[in-house]
Amino acid sequence: MITAKINKAKIILPDEFEAHDHWYPKALNATIHPMINFFLNLDQSRIINRYCHLHPKVKPEALKELLNHRSKYFLWGGADLINVTNANGKRQMVVIENNSCPSGQKSMPLIDDNKEQGSYRWLIENTFKPYIKRKRSSLKGGLAVIYDKNPMEASGYASVIADVFNEKVFFVPFYNTDKNPPVRFDNGVMFVRTEENEWHPIRAAFRYLTQKPWNRLPLHTKTTILNPTIACITGGRNKMVAAKAYDIFNTELQESGLFINTPETIWDVSKNEIPLWVRKMGGQAVIKVPYNNAGQGVYTIVTEEELDRFMDLEFDYDQFIVQSLIGNYNWSSTTKSGKLYHVGTIPNPKGATYVADIRLMVSSTENGIRPLCIYARRAEMPLINNIDSGTNSWKMLGTNLSIKNDDGSWGSDTNRLVLMDRRDFNKLGIGLDDLIEAYIQTVLSMVAIDKMAATLVNKQGKFRMRLFKSLNDDPSLIEEILV
Image (tube, rainbow, N blue to C red; front, top):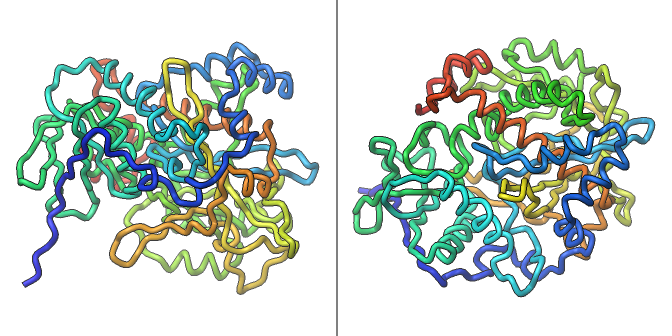
């Protein structure tokens, strides 16, 4: 008889951090590019002055206020951005999504060789620790890191938390498919199960849950959790509500001269409506299951065959979003604002240009929303000028490195990782102004989601489910949410 594995919390003590456990070897041994180092240390006032110089319609005071936004719910995020242009050569950074528990630390060369824990420690000291202090909870208990993916980074955070707080930390796997998980909630308090089968109360937890976190983490908890679940359901892991948050916030931003750049997005689309919207966009589009992440549930459509294959699939949810596809100029979606296409990487010696996106991680601190780390990812296959019936568009456009194995575990295709070091960075063909633009777009999208979360909480601190349903009326999703 085969006994199912019972997951339990591992205890991590202070002084156990080992750099080689928490960075990819190629990142740990890399030398950060001088421009990235300069950007990450750039004073806020200089960023504002430079951006407003290049965008004279932007009001400096409005930009300063946004960069100094104190997030209430969405405190740590990572935007995926693509560098695009149009037929007139107007370049911009476009936000694809902003993630509420982003990867990036293990791919970031150290800024200072003398600071072994890098931006792991920066995030814990400047965001997690102040957040716990701000909550002023009287709850007694330990500290925990819970995760369902990326143990390399999750364990790095656990080790740093142990050092910063000088106490043991419970490092706990919490998988979506676990029938007997080592995490439970009693009256809003998180408890975790150790190797001794003992349950310990947790006063605060740092979470790295990427797969439907709302079906395991209640929206209301007494245990302080970073990021709280509401940051996921209102945009950090919900592309449907994120799209609406960006649209609403763009309306608020009109007088400031600022704007969140996104692909044209159609939301609340039922499956049988999808072919109509794809046709309206010229036959090229991106279809997304709004609640999937790590590259799952994203379908690029450039031919009728790809659309037919999508329509043959079965899904757990009832609602989709359809976005304009950004590809090669000859086969990008046609929208009311024209065609956008990928700038792509600098051509390699064979003349091939690859799609690449940029992940920019930021966090909310007492000194505003600050950048933490950056990396980039390129697609598997180079862009081609013309498509035919046999074209696999995902191999040219998909950049996510995550690989879901047959047993449900996750791997990563590091061959497509582009480091911000002296060797890789120049391949991207971007400069300091592009980095500043990416940072500001990341901040704007983060603030939009944080404001949406605030809108969905009433004066008594309770989630406004009726209002949420009006924004995202998907019964299959609603059933999953733990209130």
